[in-house]
Length: 265
Ligand code: GLN
Image (cartoon, rainbow, N blue to C red; front, top):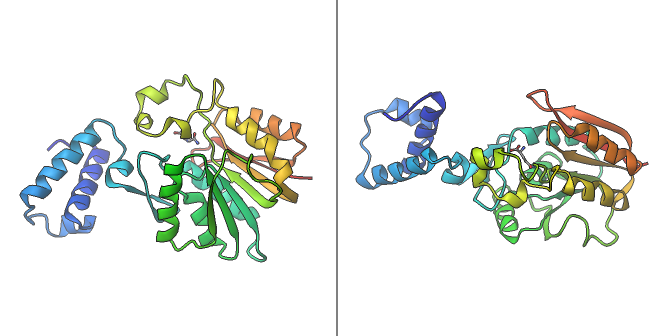
Protein backbone atom coordinates (compact mmCIF):
# COMPACT_ATOMS: atom_id res chain seq x y z
CA UNK A 1 0.00 0.00 0.00
CA UNK A 2 1.33 3.47 -0.87
CA UNK A 3 -0.10 5.23 2.21
CA UNK A 4 2.73 6.95 4.03
CA UNK A 5 0.68 8.45 6.83
CA UNK A 6 -2.83 9.06 8.10
CA UNK A 7 -3.45 11.89 5.68
CA UNK A 8 -2.31 9.79 2.70
CA UNK A 9 -4.64 7.05 3.85
CA UNK A 10 -7.52 9.48 4.13
CA UNK A 11 -6.78 10.86 0.65
CA UNK A 12 -6.68 7.31 -0.75
CA UNK A 13 -10.02 6.53 0.84
CA UNK A 14 -11.57 9.71 -0.52
CA UNK A 15 -10.25 8.94 -4.00
CA UNK A 16 -11.66 5.41 -3.79
CA UNK A 17 -15.03 6.85 -2.72
CA UNK A 18 -14.92 9.34 -5.58
CA UNK A 19 -14.13 6.65 -8.14
CA UNK A 20 -16.62 4.10 -6.80
CA UNK A 21 -19.38 6.55 -5.93
CA UNK A 22 -19.63 5.40 -2.32
CA UNK A 23 -19.11 7.02 1.08
CA UNK A 24 -16.20 6.32 3.43
CA UNK A 25 -18.29 4.19 5.75
CA UNK A 26 -18.82 1.76 2.86
CA UNK A 27 -15.08 1.09 2.64
CA UNK A 28 -15.05 -0.13 6.24
CA UNK A 29 -18.44 -1.80 6.09
CA UNK A 30 -17.73 -3.83 2.94
CA UNK A 31 -13.94 -3.88 2.61
CA UNK A 32 -13.96 -6.81 0.19
CA UNK A 33 -16.30 -5.29 -2.38
CA UNK A 34 -14.59 -5.86 -5.74
CA UNK A 35 -13.82 -2.82 -7.92
CA UNK A 36 -14.05 -2.86 -11.69
CA UNK A 37 -10.97 -2.61 -13.90
CA UNK A 38 -12.11 0.86 -14.98
CA UNK A 39 -12.48 2.02 -11.38
CA UNK A 40 -9.05 0.63 -10.54
CA UNK A 41 -7.46 2.36 -13.52
CA UNK A 42 -9.16 5.66 -12.68
CA UNK A 43 -8.10 5.37 -9.03
CA UNK A 44 -4.46 4.84 -10.02
CA UNK A 45 -4.59 7.86 -12.36
CA UNK A 46 -5.99 10.12 -9.65
CA UNK A 47 -3.59 8.78 -7.02
CA UNK A 48 -0.75 9.73 -9.35
CA UNK A 49 -2.07 13.31 -9.55
CA UNK A 50 -2.29 13.45 -5.76
CA UNK A 51 1.23 12.02 -5.39
CA UNK A 52 2.38 14.84 -7.69
CA UNK A 53 0.99 17.35 -5.19
CA UNK A 54 -2.31 18.34 -6.82
CA UNK A 55 -4.77 19.25 -4.04
CA UNK A 56 -7.55 16.77 -3.27
CA UNK A 57 -10.21 19.42 -3.82
CA UNK A 58 -9.12 19.87 -7.43
CA UNK A 59 -8.89 16.14 -8.08
CA UNK A 60 -12.32 15.28 -6.72
CA UNK A 61 -13.77 18.61 -7.85
CA UNK A 62 -15.17 19.84 -4.57
CA UNK A 63 -14.36 20.75 -1.00
CA UNK A 64 -16.16 21.51 2.22
CA UNK A 65 -16.47 25.00 3.69
CA UNK A 66 -18.76 25.95 6.57
CA UNK A 67 -20.13 22.37 6.39
CA UNK A 68 -21.31 22.95 2.82
CA UNK A 69 -19.92 21.35 -0.32
CA UNK A 70 -18.46 23.63 -3.00
CA UNK A 71 -17.41 22.82 -6.56
CA UNK A 72 -13.75 23.65 -7.17
CA UNK A 73 -11.54 23.66 -10.26
CA UNK A 74 -8.12 25.00 -11.20
CA UNK A 75 -9.56 28.49 -11.85
CA UNK A 76 -10.43 29.22 -8.24
CA UNK A 77 -8.75 29.37 -4.85
CA UNK A 78 -9.72 26.37 -2.75
CA UNK A 79 -11.76 27.62 0.23
CA UNK A 80 -9.72 27.27 3.43
CA UNK A 81 -10.62 27.07 7.08
CA UNK A 82 -8.77 30.43 7.59
CA UNK A 83 -11.61 32.04 5.70
CA UNK A 84 -14.19 30.64 8.09
CA UNK A 85 -12.79 33.23 10.53
CA UNK A 86 -13.69 35.95 8.03
CA UNK A 87 -17.22 34.55 7.63
CA UNK A 88 -17.68 34.12 11.37
CA UNK A 89 -16.48 37.66 12.11
CA UNK A 90 -18.83 39.05 9.46
CA UNK A 91 -21.82 37.05 10.71
CA UNK A 92 -21.24 38.45 14.22
CA UNK A 93 -21.76 41.91 12.71
CA UNK A 94 -24.46 41.24 10.09
CA UNK A 95 -27.89 41.59 11.69
CA UNK A 96 -30.42 38.78 11.51
CA UNK A 97 -33.17 41.28 10.80
CA UNK A 98 -33.61 43.80 7.99
CA UNK A 99 -32.26 43.34 4.48
CA UNK A 100 -28.52 43.96 4.55
CA UNK A 101 -26.71 44.55 1.28
CA UNK A 102 -23.35 42.81 1.22
CA UNK A 103 -20.45 42.73 -1.26
CA UNK A 104 -18.08 39.75 -1.52
CA UNK A 105 -15.12 40.93 -3.60
CA UNK A 106 -13.00 38.32 -5.38
CA UNK A 107 -15.54 35.62 -4.69
CA UNK A 108 -13.75 32.71 -6.42
CA UNK A 109 -15.88 29.62 -5.70
CA UNK A 110 -18.59 31.90 -4.29
CA UNK A 111 -18.22 30.18 -0.91
CA UNK A 112 -18.35 33.35 1.21
CA UNK A 113 -21.35 34.75 -0.66
CA UNK A 114 -23.24 31.45 -0.51
CA UNK A 115 -22.67 31.14 3.25
CA UNK A 116 -23.99 34.69 3.75
CA UNK A 117 -27.03 33.91 1.62
CA UNK A 118 -27.62 30.72 3.61
CA UNK A 119 -27.11 32.26 7.06
CA UNK A 120 -28.91 35.54 6.28
CA UNK A 121 -31.65 34.61 3.81
CA UNK A 122 -33.00 38.16 3.68
CA UNK A 123 -29.61 39.61 2.61
CA UNK A 124 -28.68 40.55 -0.95
CA UNK A 125 -25.10 39.65 -1.83
CA UNK A 126 -23.19 41.10 -4.77
CA UNK A 127 -20.30 38.72 -5.45
CA UNK A 128 -17.62 39.85 -7.88
CA UNK A 129 -14.55 38.42 -9.51
CA UNK A 130 -12.22 39.59 -12.24
CA UNK A 131 -12.06 36.08 -13.67
CA UNK A 132 -14.92 34.91 -15.90
CA UNK A 133 -13.88 31.29 -15.25
CA UNK A 134 -14.14 31.84 -11.50
CA UNK A 135 -17.62 33.36 -11.93
CA UNK A 136 -18.64 30.22 -13.81
CA UNK A 137 -17.68 28.11 -10.78
CA UNK A 138 -19.39 30.57 -8.41
CA UNK A 139 -22.54 30.37 -10.49
CA UNK A 140 -22.57 26.55 -10.25
CA UNK A 141 -22.20 26.82 -6.47
CA UNK A 142 -24.96 29.41 -6.16
CA UNK A 143 -27.30 27.17 -8.14
CA UNK A 144 -26.37 24.08 -6.09
CA UNK A 145 -27.15 25.94 -2.87
CA UNK A 146 -30.18 27.77 -4.29
CA UNK A 147 -28.56 31.07 -3.36
CA UNK A 148 -30.90 33.12 -5.50
CA UNK A 149 -30.09 36.37 -3.69
CA UNK A 150 -26.44 36.24 -4.74
CA UNK A 151 -25.82 38.42 -7.78
CA UNK A 152 -22.60 37.66 -9.65
CA UNK A 153 -20.69 40.33 -11.56
CA UNK A 154 -17.32 40.57 -13.29
CA UNK A 155 -15.44 43.46 -11.72
CA UNK A 156 -12.00 44.73 -10.83
CA UNK A 157 -12.59 45.40 -7.13
CA UNK A 158 -14.99 48.36 -6.92
CA UNK A 159 -14.10 50.24 -10.10
CA UNK A 160 -17.42 49.46 -11.87
CA UNK A 161 -19.68 49.94 -8.85
CA UNK A 162 -20.85 53.48 -9.71
CA UNK A 163 -22.92 54.70 -6.78
CA UNK A 164 -23.89 51.37 -5.14
CA UNK A 165 -23.51 51.50 -1.34
CA UNK A 166 -23.25 48.47 0.93
CA UNK A 167 -23.83 47.68 4.58
CA UNK A 168 -20.89 45.26 4.49
CA UNK A 169 -17.97 44.80 2.13
CA UNK A 170 -16.12 41.54 2.68
CA UNK A 171 -13.10 40.22 0.83
CA UNK A 172 -10.54 37.46 0.87
CA UNK A 173 -8.24 39.03 -1.73
CA UNK A 174 -4.85 37.79 -2.93
CA UNK A 175 -2.28 38.68 -0.25
CA UNK A 176 0.82 36.56 -0.79
CA UNK A 177 4.15 38.24 -1.63
CA UNK A 178 5.14 37.60 -5.25
CA UNK A 179 8.47 35.99 -4.32
CA UNK A 180 7.16 33.90 -1.41
CA UNK A 181 8.82 30.47 -1.77
CA UNK A 182 5.49 28.86 -0.77
CA UNK A 183 4.24 29.58 -4.27
CA UNK A 184 6.74 27.19 -5.80
CA UNK A 185 7.31 24.71 -2.99
CA UNK A 186 3.85 23.75 -1.77
CA UNK A 187 0.63 22.41 -3.21
CA UNK A 188 -0.65 25.98 -3.64
CA UNK A 189 1.37 26.04 -6.88
CA UNK A 190 -1.65 24.28 -8.42
CA UNK A 191 -3.98 27.17 -7.57
CA UNK A 192 -4.43 30.28 -9.74
CA UNK A 193 -1.65 32.78 -9.09
CA UNK A 194 -3.96 35.72 -9.66
CA UNK A 195 -6.06 34.57 -6.69
CA UNK A 196 -3.01 34.37 -4.42
CA UNK A 197 -0.35 36.94 -5.27
CA UNK A 198 -0.51 40.70 -4.70
CA UNK A 199 2.80 42.40 -5.46
CA UNK A 200 6.11 42.54 -3.60
CA UNK A 201 4.62 42.87 -0.09
CA UNK A 202 1.33 41.05 -0.77
CA UNK A 203 -0.63 44.22 -0.02
CA UNK A 204 -1.31 45.59 -3.52
CA UNK A 205 -4.96 44.48 -3.64
CA UNK A 206 -5.65 45.22 0.03
CA UNK A 207 -4.46 48.82 -0.57
CA UNK A 208 -6.91 49.22 -3.44
CA UNK A 209 -9.81 47.66 -1.53
CA UNK A 210 -9.31 49.72 1.64
CA UNK A 211 -8.95 52.87 -0.46
CA UNK A 212 -12.09 52.26 -2.54
CA UNK A 213 -14.34 50.92 0.23
CA UNK A 214 -15.39 54.13 2.05
CA UNK A 215 -17.06 55.46 -1.10
CA UNK A 216 -19.15 52.28 -1.38
CA UNK A 217 -20.11 51.82 2.25
CA UNK A 218 -23.15 53.29 3.93
CA UNK A 219 -22.46 55.32 7.04
CA UNK A 220 -21.84 52.80 9.85
CA UNK A 221 -21.12 50.07 7.27
CA UNK A 222 -18.22 47.67 7.76
CA UNK A 223 -15.26 46.59 5.67
CA UNK A 224 -13.84 43.17 6.59
CA UNK A 225 -10.76 41.68 4.93
CA UNK A 226 -8.70 38.54 5.28
CA UNK A 227 -4.91 38.99 5.20
CA UNK A 228 -1.62 37.22 5.90
CA UNK A 229 -0.72 36.39 9.52
CA UNK A 230 2.09 38.98 9.42
CA UNK A 231 0.17 41.80 7.70
CA UNK A 232 -2.27 42.83 10.43
CA UNK A 233 -0.51 45.98 11.64
CA UNK A 234 0.00 47.24 8.08
CA UNK A 235 -3.65 46.55 7.27
CA UNK A 236 -4.82 48.36 10.42
CA UNK A 237 -2.66 51.28 9.31
CA UNK A 238 -4.39 51.28 5.89
CA UNK A 239 -7.79 51.32 7.65
CA UNK A 240 -6.66 54.22 9.86
CA UNK A 241 -5.46 56.22 6.83
CA UNK A 242 -8.95 55.94 5.28
CA UNK A 243 -10.73 57.05 8.46
CA UNK A 244 -12.21 53.73 9.58
CA UNK A 245 -13.25 53.50 13.20
CA UNK A 246 -13.26 50.63 15.71
CA UNK A 247 -10.63 48.84 13.63
CA UNK A 248 -10.11 45.40 15.08
CA UNK A 249 -8.14 42.29 14.11
CA UNK A 250 -9.46 38.79 14.69
CA UNK A 251 -7.31 35.67 15.05
CA UNK A 252 -7.89 32.45 13.12
CA UNK A 253 -8.15 28.98 14.68
CA UNK A 254 -4.36 28.75 14.54
CA UNK A 255 -4.23 31.90 16.72
CA UNK A 256 -2.77 34.01 13.86
CA UNK A 257 -4.00 37.54 13.14
CA UNK A 258 -6.08 36.87 10.04
CA UNK A 259 -9.06 39.23 9.64
CA UNK A 260 -9.25 42.99 10.10
CA UNK A 261 -12.44 45.02 10.10
CA UNK A 262 -13.45 48.60 10.63
CA UNK A 263 -16.54 50.78 10.55
CA UNK A 264 -17.11 53.71 8.26
CA UNK A 265 -17.71 56.81 10.36
N1 GLN B 1 -4.57 31.79 2.97
C1 GLN B 1 -4.06 31.43 1.69
C2 GLN B 1 -2.73 30.74 1.82
O1 GLN B 1 -1.87 31.22 2.51
C3 GLN B 1 -3.93 32.63 0.77
C4 GLN B 1 -5.25 33.05 0.33
C5 GLN B 1 -5.22 34.39 -0.29
O2 GLN B 1 -4.24 34.86 -0.85
N2 GLN B 1 -6.31 35.03 -0.18
O3 GLN B 1 -2.53 29.71 1.21
